[in-house]
Image 1 (cartoon, helix red, strand yellow):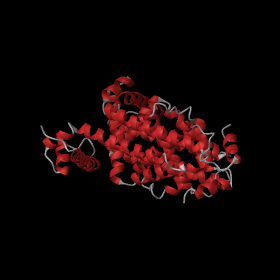
Image 2: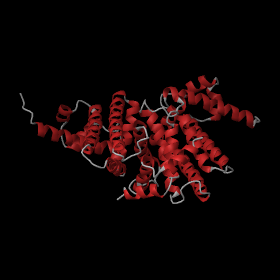
Image 3: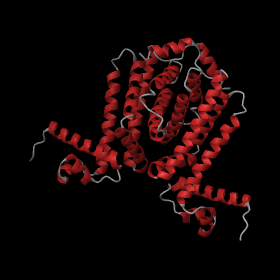
Image 4: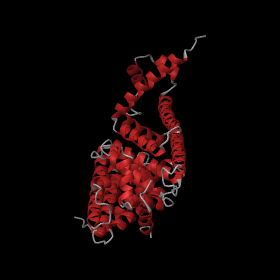
Length: 211
Length: 211
């Protein structure tokens, strides 16, 4: 029986995922063959199939990697003093990822695949649920500390922050004039005004224009 | 030579488009045949091809119809006194459309097709440009009348309003807990706080948290 060195195993997995990301970003999921991923990763098909049984398993692992990274980020915020600053930093990361052409292409491929493939769809929904739970918790704790408006429902605020994250990626995909990094001050202003309005006058004008 | 009655011609076109929308929403663009659209519209293939040479032409006509309706809406706002209220009304229409399962499915199909088909992609980008120009003009005029914060760049504000419109559709697609009509007060609050903050305190806190 062959002994598995966990570190070596993980390094190989990461090598395959990296190669797959490169291929998927260039040609899309459906036009990429496992043979091309093997060539990019510099390994034989037999070796690749030892790590991932098929292409769907590679896509699933990429979505899972995404989930893990988001979870790690929010895990790291639990010790922070200024939770609102952590939220703004998270949005900075979103803008940086959206300005990376490979990440952007991959994110759009995953969104499209989630509509076509039920298994990938479930994983994407799971990631989205986790992101919303993390945002909800952060906003709830921030409100308790007086760092964001406590009158806002944190679950609903989390939904609109998630809508803004989605919106960033769809803007980059559709509008060549939308430069994510240049939009950083505007996004920070939008979120700041939304979550911590200056005073009573602001709430008043919001209420009166809802009539 | 057969005489064309323009009204009758337009009514037939609309009948085909309506049938196509029903089919596309049920099965998606790629799994819908022109034969199925004919059956749904109750007409022969020869008759359908007289109006649209192929399925792509039908999709293009649906995207063009969308463009016309948006243009009509903003055309109607030019005579309005309260331009900010017109913007909020526009967002209400977005929420209503996103809560219509047929429209939602169609919007997601069009977004996916825009990535696959260059011609449809160009039409969608054109619609998006027109929407942004219309929002930009509305926001510029609203700022001149003191109805929105004049310190915001109207082109950038228009981009973030467009990002919120995209975000609404992607939220409905991915998050079963996102009910667009229930989110109406929250979206109005978000846009109101963003575009007309209460006072100096708000701007101050936005500036200090950007550091």
